[in-house]
Image 1 (cartoon, rainbow, N blue to C red):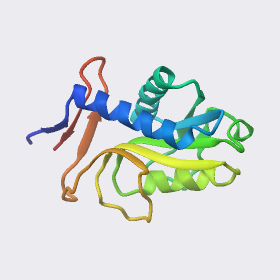
Image 2 (spheres, rainbow, N blue to C red):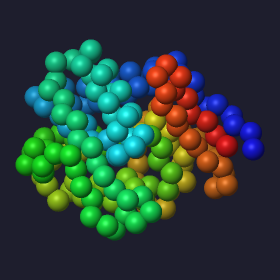
Image 3 (tube, helix red, strand yellow):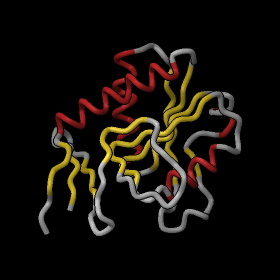
Length: 165
């Protein structure tokens, strides 16, 4: 099966920086924001966004890792920080790829149990095949793919890429 690169390392860097600027513009009135990365590639992408935010602004940024079983999203979701640490703050939920929307939807539901000042979502690749009414507020690229195709994001030091197979 062939792999078509849809984003190379330089393009991912550019899109990460752009998303960081969009987050800063949206949350510039906040003193502190929480960047919640979905465990795995979502948390890797979240850390990259935090690095960019630390360069471009003086917002206090807190990393939160979100653990969800993607095969069984109804199982309890856990976070690396306590709900009191994100209560009444701005939060951005981040994943690498938005496929059907299942993972993002259940994670959004989890965070809505606590009052937040603002809540946004960000993904590197939005596949436009959603089962749920969820969207990415900030996205690197949108793709209309067939259900048989798969988007894979690989984060390797200096060799990041996203490809379609």
